[in-house]
Image 1 (cartoon, one colour):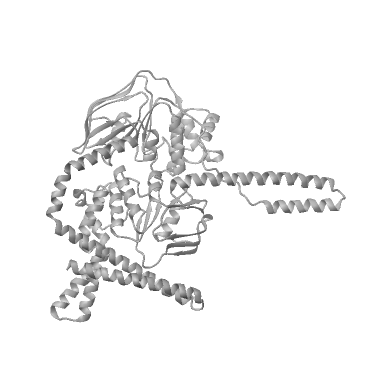
Image 2 (tube, helix red, strand yellow):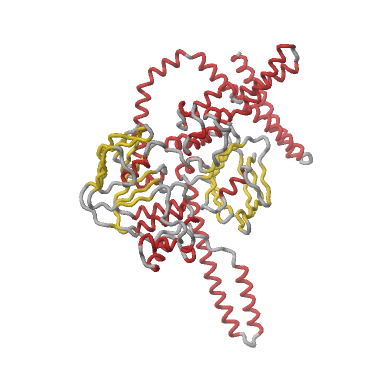
Length: 627
């Protein structure tokens, strides 16, 4: 069954043709990733699918009975709404059923009517099927996975940070039990634990998932198919992100090979046609042959030159000498905001050759600590001492320039004081070509700002590079550019990031900020995660006896919950079989004149009816056990 059908979709912004005759289908249960550089039309397509944006021509079909949940932006809720009220809004359909059930209960107190009883029984079964008696359990389970503590549920939604609001919106979408889940950058503002929980949830989600994400680890684990947009045109890849990368490279090489072979043949034929025109002065036969070759050349022009997959940054950092073993030292560093202690008694030494990832949950103070190390913020207590030979520079999370109204070229001229030719050479190395250097800085995207700031930093002599979320909000191409530049840097590196791909690529040491304390782990990110997992498993084993005792004491309750779960699963299977039988009946009507097809379809119908009878019998037995 098709959940989303897009046919010949076109969208214009003025004269800019954003989506060009776009067509694709997404089958029920598929997990599809939408990839492409910023400006390729991803967000436009997403907004069209979610109903936020209209389109100029084409057709989009989503079955009316499919429930769609969207995570694209933070919605507005009534002023003063608590987080708990926002989460409960996910069960609005259950509220409507509950209200009708209460109304019917009042009617049944006055008189008994078969129709009223039948309606009540139907609503009651539907309410239970939709998890109406387990809403609090579902909320608690989802909140626990996304790191939403009980005290946050009592807070007013509007007072939360951007990251906290993102968690609530994702939780709300998941609690709606949708058939189709549309996710636009769901991992932005989420810490690593929350991302990994969502990463584990989505593969087990029974519905259809459509994701825009630049988190390469996340999409590699969560998608089974890729739609890549480039200049409003789609390319399709039947696999996850790793498959997409390999297949895209293979397709590029194959197309480039065909293009070069075609161009070489065209070049030979053009030379031949030109010579025949020269020889054929006064010779009609040669002229005819020359024109025939030119027509053949036009018919041959089928293969377009493939667009480069990745344009390299052709520049490197200017390195400066460093002597000594230690880069910097933190001594008794402490910082608090509004009576909230972020961290205290931080005593650490960064050594020469370290590439440290500073990780931790949102709100723990990672950016604050990095700013203290960069001398852009002062600790309440303690000191940061640099090796005298250290030359440091920081790439902040929010990049600003001295004058946002200057052009890219003028920014280089004023900020680092180089000649016009040197500035243009450096900018070209960072993919700012031609008239692009005259674009105003305030119009640049996040990725372009990062590239320009790195271009400035590379002009300086540094041996310590500090990065605060360097890949946040960047498309995959821009992330690869940043990674290429950082890989070229041979000094010490300290960075804050939630991008596991970036962390795994560069970190040889992990500083995890948790509960105001830094846990120092000397090793890679993967080694750090394995160490944490082993520690958690050991902790769970220590708690195992208490858990077993609790389970033995509450056996009847657990059995009832298991029975209720089996009932709901059986009801879902019955619904699917009924849908399959209805679909089979429609196929029989269409094939009324095809004897072979009818014979096959009737056989399939009998098998479906037999399976339905078995499921109904199972449902009756389970229901009797639960009464």
